[in-house]
Length: 279
Ligand SMILES: Cc1cc2nc3c(=O)[nH]c(=O)nc-3n(C[C@H](O)[C@H](O)[C@H](O)COP(=O)(O)OP(=O)(O)OC[C@H]3O[C@@H](n4cnc5c(N)ncnc54)[C@H](O)[C@@H]3O)c2cc1C
Image 1 (tube, rainbow, N blue to C red):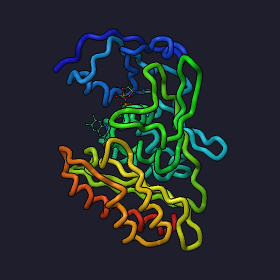
Image 2: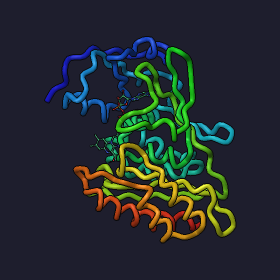
Image 3: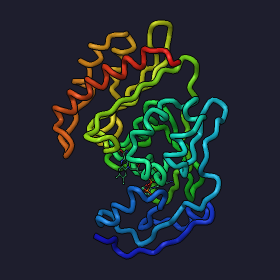
């Protein structure tokens, strides 16, 4: 199919983009998700506002105790970034699982977070890392915690007139432990179920455990009871707790029962990663 007719404008600056966007407009970043939804006529905005020419909303910078990743940073840039590998190793682990190289060359970090596909890797990483999302709109700038940003199926705290400008995550320290695993039918497909995790090594124990599942609900899902059990060092109790933490619906990829089983397998794998010191 072909998209419904739309107008196209190229934003020169962030302010220009904010001026152009309206309720029936969509921002165009990498286009890897948007163009497909237009072609399938799942979305038919009157106007596309291309943000690819805006300076200052790309790039990866260490700012104090946080790593900031600009919205227009391509997945491939983040995948190859020494800063991401060093300061956000969870994102580095997740990157190769996002689609294929051609998709990662165009797709942006901001687009993935704004699109909020429940089976996407980056939203779950952002939640696991207790990150933040920076937004700019007609009323000025604001920051939203990842836990509050993802609201439901493809639904976020973004209003139709806001631009996501960057994400920020706490820079990893010597005691930071991360873990990542997913099951996909083929490498590069959206995951049937996946898990992004972060913790702080506290002697032989784990503190501040955050487990964010993807592909098992309408948005990234924290497994809070499993987090508590894992902090106590009991992996099997953590797997048992998933029964109350997760209620995955059936979808085209797998039944809820299969996803629940996979969630337990993922947790055993990721718990092992969390308990191993980083080289
Ligand atoms: C075959 C295929 C396989 C894929 N597999 C995966 C996968 O396994 N995992 C995965 O996570 N993703 C996957 N993707 C999606 C890919 O990661 C996309 O790049 C990403 O979801 C959207 O980023 P984008 O820059 O292309 O955004 P676009 O497609 O340009 O935009 C997506 C949506 O976000 C909005 N948006 C974009 N940028 C901003 C911004 N800065 N502020 C506010 N709103 C914004 C747009 O208006 C639009 O509604 C796949 C895509 C394809 C085509």
